[in-house]
Each structure stands twice: as structure tokens, then as C-alpha cells.
Image 1: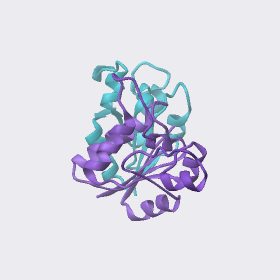
Image 2: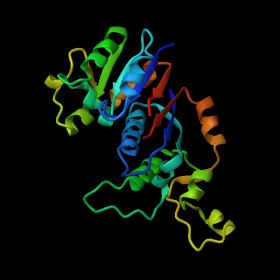
Image 3: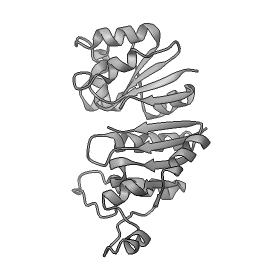
Image 4: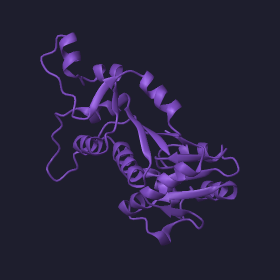
Length: 130
Length: 102
């Protein structure tokens, strides 16, 4: 079965990003496909490579990046939500005259159409948030 | 067409559990996750809401979230079933859609 995942909450806010990560990992282990993981609202904060949590804490950005790389996941960050919160890739940084970009490995910036498409293409859409 | 309803907030913080259980149809299931599992504990003021939900559908609680909050299997309201993350995935697959009561 194909599943699409939506993450509406940032890391370390409550638990939604953790739950979404464990759910996605369990779905992959059971042989399901992941159509897309869409990071929306504060969820875009999962996609900055500049997070530095304490060493004894889980690093959610790294966990997502590693899971994405291992399984070739399409992890999309909503562009409007990302720009508001300072999540930029190199092209967006250049376009807006910013001196740095911070998108993490495995994430890409795109539009809300990607969420709609995932909802249409996947058998199930599962939302995690606050 | 059955629905899996997920509730991730404590019934003592928000009314998501009550709202959700008021919309259950035959064959639906409720899964309590994160702080939502506090609603699965017996003896609280939320018991009546969960018992009403058990009359129209199935009620589950995510085991690792119960364990993290010190809720043991013996503490659960009778009829509430524990699932792990793999069981959560199965519930999503078994129902035609999933609604998160955020």
C-alpha cells in the first residue's frame, strides 16, 4: 500500500515529528511504499541542517535525512511555510538575497500542489501535528 | 467505509477525544497516541467517553506512548487494546481513511 505522510509540527515542540518518524519507519519495515512526506506549517523546521541538539538527545533532522536517504523518500518542505521560517535552499537564498541556505540533505522545497498530488496518488494520507 | 481516528492530546487538555467519539460510525476505530493515551487510563473522568466509544467501535492506545507515561497494561480501561507502531500502520491500512483530530 502507498502511504503519504504530513508533518505539521516542528521538532522538539511536542511529539508529532517523533511519531511521524516512527510511523514512517514502521510502514517501510512492513513493506509499504511512502508516496511523499510533506512538511507543512512549523513542520518545515524539521528540514534545517543547522539544528544542534544536545548529544544525548535525538536529532530529528538527522533521523529524517538518514531515513530519506536509506529509502529514497521524497521529503518536501512547503515553500511558503519555509520562507516565513527561514528555511532556504541555495536557489531560494540567492533569489531573496540571503547570505546562506540551510536545507538539510534529503529535503527539497516545493509547493502545496505536492501535498494535493500525494493525497490523490497515495492509498492513505496520515497527518501528524499539534 | 470505515475511519481510523487518531487523538494525540490529553482529554484533560483539549476536547479532541470527546469530539472524535461523537462522530464514530460503525466499524470505526479510535487510536490514542502521544498525550492522548492519558485517556486510556482507568479511573479518570474520561472513562465514560472511552466506554461510549467502545460501544460503537474499537479503541486502541499506542503502547510505547503508554509506557513512556507510566501507564501499564493493567491500568487500561477494559476493552482498550494496545498496539505498537507496526500495529498503528496496520490500523491505517485496515481503514479506508485516517482522520487526525488536531
